[in-house]
Image (cartoon, rainbow, N blue to C red; front, top):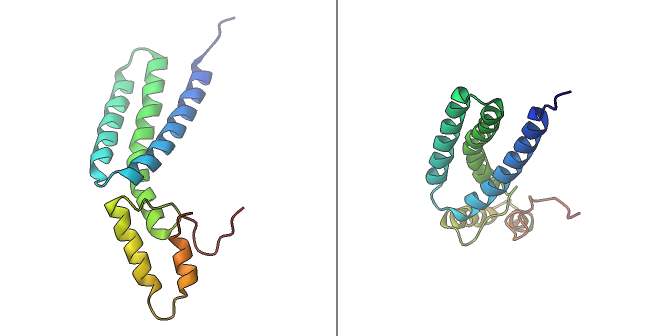
Length: 137
């Protein structure tokens, strides 16, 4: 009986790739002032890995590079989506990042509009990064 490692290796590769990219998207988005640089790097590396997977003679190498490549391409979209999450208050803003400073300033100016409850609006931009109205677990 021959052992086929393709399935377990695919599962581990997918898990590590998705987890690692999730963490990196959050950190890169929080620390990078200009997102186009990491987005371009992710796009190019993902495209290279996907192309390499098409021409790899080894199934294991092809599968691994395809999984990591498509994850990197997806992360180009996730970097933009993470920025939108910060605008909405669903993710924590980094007050030391100039892009996030602009977001926080805009939230403060919205909180000062007539008819807006400042306590609820400012809660969304608190250091906890929780959306307004959410209770802590």
